[in-house]
Amino acid sequence: MIEAELKARVHNPEYVIGQLDRRAEGRAEVYHDTYYDDPSGTLDARDQELRVRTLKGPHSTRSVLTYKGACVDAESGSKSEHETHVDNPEAVHATLRGLGYVPVISFQKRCRNYEFTSRRRSMLATLVQVPEIDGTFLEIETMVREENELPAALADVRAVMDELGIHEDDFTTELYTEAVAERRGAGPGPCPSPRLNS
Image (cartoon, rainbow, N blue to C red; front, side, top):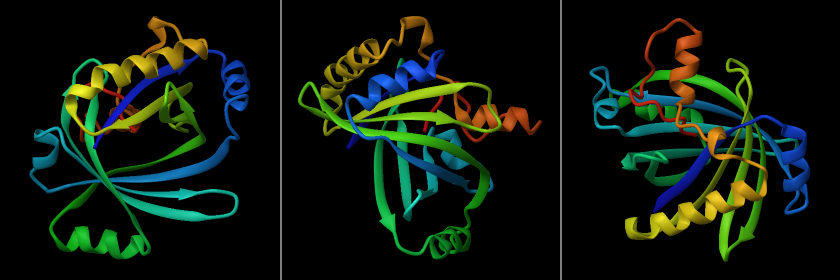
């Protein structure tokens, strides 16, 4: 599967929240993301990602293991994605370390998620605040099976962004990982390109 996703800086979060609330009920969650690589940075060099994410909501906590392949669309930063739920995240962390992977960066994201259907596609819109980064971001994604389906899917995502008041100048391809690493004074993060991936 390929994650067709666009991201933007949000200048009027209250307006966007109001528009999203008309589409679906929002779900507040805190993400704790840990990115892994081998000591030589092989995944980074190949533009790949290996992440353990724990999502904490008001009534439940769940964790997922995600692998993302190299970028398949430079403009959006969309990547192939394989994700699975894990019942024991500590065991997954221990397994990855045991296999020789090391944590590269770990940080929190405060999110409000909306799931809805638009243009006959299942979409996930997420308002994101990262405590170490200024501002609010909006990510909207839908999944496609083949790379040739990506342009149409991204066009549909862009249309929804437009309906929510997001303008062309608001789109960004920065990376959360790089921005957090820079704020911490750690230099470049695990991802060298300036995309803002989730």
